[in-house]
Image (cartoon, rainbow, N blue to C red; front, top):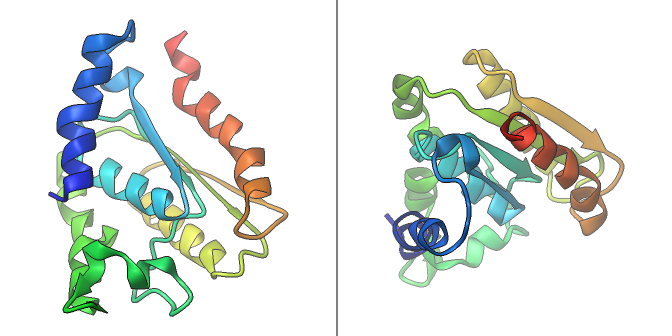
Length: 171
């Protein structure tokens, strides 16, 4: 578990549920993120499906294979070894490494995936592969493609629908 993952799972979520008037439990808890945060969201719902009702995955930088040289993943600590990007670490932490164990858990999840139709980082293809993988495994993910690139316009126009999907049954 990484420091960030540890902080969110073991510290942030328990702190929020202890400190604020929120309903606790999987059915009231979802996670979402965009770009690298979309990668993280995908990782969290696969690794901890018993904790989350679902995930809002916007333009996920979750390349199944090695990310392109233009991806910020090429320069962040979790994927670095000896100050260079490590294919081995990418494969170890990326979502395909979590897939089989996730499926064994048989946890229900709401999944909302969105991407821009002209994402310059090739993330539309990444998003579709993630969508298809969930769909082929018996899930019913929502998949939205909107006009735009890897930008706030795309995320701003899709996040509301993702939030509604996650929590429409809670109220």
